[in-house]
Length: 217
Image 1 (cartoon, one colour):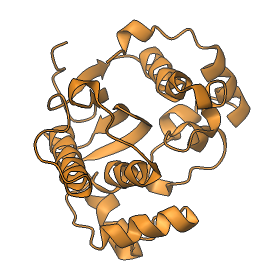
Image 2 (image 1 turned 90 degrees about the vertical axis):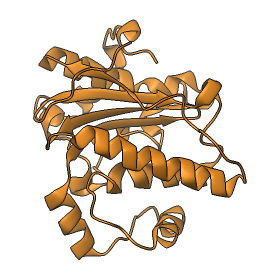
Image 3 (image 1 turned 180 degrees about the vertical axis):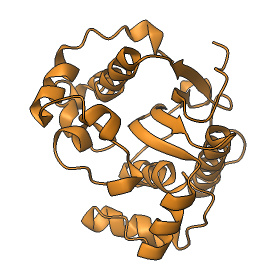
């Protein structure tokens, strides 16, 4: 599928998978590292002591970055992350571009960081992902809502999480039906304000007739 033309103010479904469909995330440490990247690399503002921050998250569930760093990151981000699902060999993101070239630079930061981390941890070299990334332009609100349902149901592919995808920790689903764990780093307003309650959105996800072929990787 050809990559959609990216533009500020527009929303896109971004996805990629491991080279030859190999797993990229083998344990919670790998997932936590990628989660940090997709949240904190929305801006080119550097974040220091990443290993310490991720280790702290593994212990207490919080990425304890300095408040001033978070403030600068949010002020200068090139994209807004609205949806995500991290799976063993692929990932899905729902992203709104804020600045021209923002999504491309964001994915470059994320994927270079992930590859470097992975190669160091697993003592390997070379490519990790099958290519730069794929993108689908989200043209209507209906498409946006159904994309959110598709992304948030993605964990059903994993037998352990089938019918329990609302508890899957490496997805933004629970941030829409309970409390947003990431504050301003995850922008939920555009979807959340269209539902009268958290449970109404959960019902929408569970019953949505998503057209999976439209979003498949």
